[in-house]
Image (cartoon, rainbow, N blue to C red; front, side, top):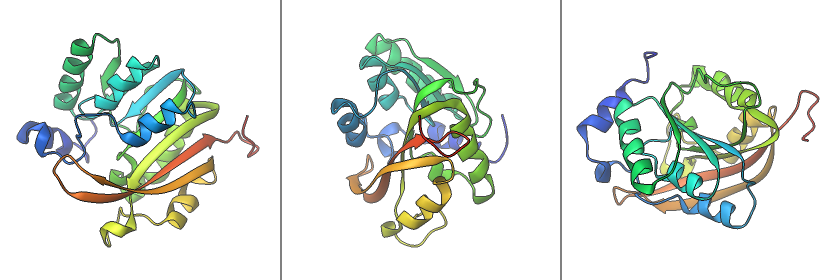
Length: 205
């Protein structure tokens, strides 16, 4: 496994899920909303940094053909257990998000709950290009990342920063500022961004 992000497996091994803020134990409300309102079409989905698999299982239950990846073998073990309990078929893989082992345009939808904001600054462009590559033309990318409202930090973003980072590769359809009481009981602020993949000429099919 590539070095640099391997500490995530130690976190999953050291702490129970209920102490990990991002592990709500239920699907993210914003994902449920977009799915229930039909704003994300069913198809092949990639849950990038899927963690213990709660959102991944939800997508499978809603009829998506789902792949979930995480750099942590322990997280993937949790996700496999959840998938078995829910009786859904999910392709779950231990994989670094910077080296996506998928074909070009393989997915219709990429879901990113809190993955991008942990990507180091020097790796951001590679990450964005990777997501862009594996999405079909016009495919949907739903990003949720930390907001500046949590206080100053290298990975707490303003709306302008998000737009500047993603607008070359994606058409930004909606940006929403939200708050959430996380799994550890702490209120945090996020931006959720609904995007469509641009093709090489800048259009969206």
